[in-house]
Length: 219
Ligand SMILES: N[C@@H](CCC(=O)N[C@@H](CS)C(=O)NCC(=O)O)C(=O)O
Image 1 (cartoon, rainbow, N blue to C red):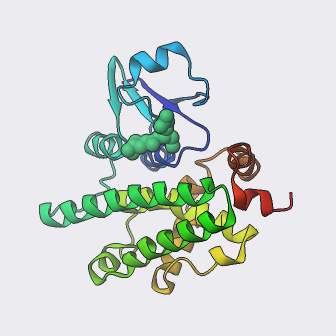
Image 2: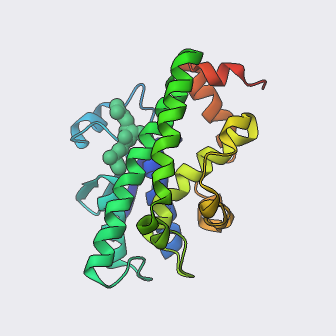
Image 3: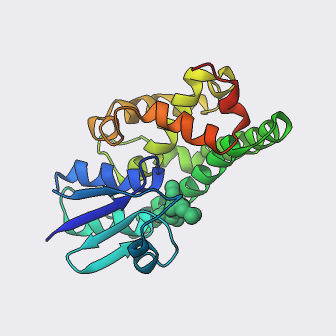
């Protein structure tokens, strides 16, 4: 089986796929495209014009949660609960995590301070929902590394990066979940899932998009 992952160098959704492939020790080729100027073949391939795409031999998959679920079904070790109800709960919170990734990016896209504060507050509200007793029971409670961990690792990585630059990002993760965040970031598959100069590229990308907060950070 030949796997080809089409990604964008800063994409947290594609990063989920990379982490899953690394956890499972599966060989794959990785192709980064420039989303601002995508190659012609990309528009033909991608129904939504989005990455990640995973080509499995001749078959194309899209949507990160679908891709990692597929990989989990065909490659050991299993990274989801066996119980159908518990598995469905994990999937629901993975979807919630996808929404959080979009909220987090929208904070960085804010073009002025007022909009930034408004979006940061909304993001914090959504994040605080992770303190829901049901959610807390699912997050980081097992010794196994699961798809729910994979799904949240790119979010926590971005929050940790922003926290290095901006103090208001340091208190965002609910305290009970901070050990989970640290454990995820220490995981080799997570640490090795982005390019070496990720922080620099991340800042430059949002700066070029007119991000207010990135403009406040001294290089
Ligand atoms: N729900 C999708 C989201 C993927 C997504 O939003 N990808 C972004 C990059 S991180 C993208 O390709 N954006 C291109 C665009 O919207 O034009 C998934 O989970 O795979």
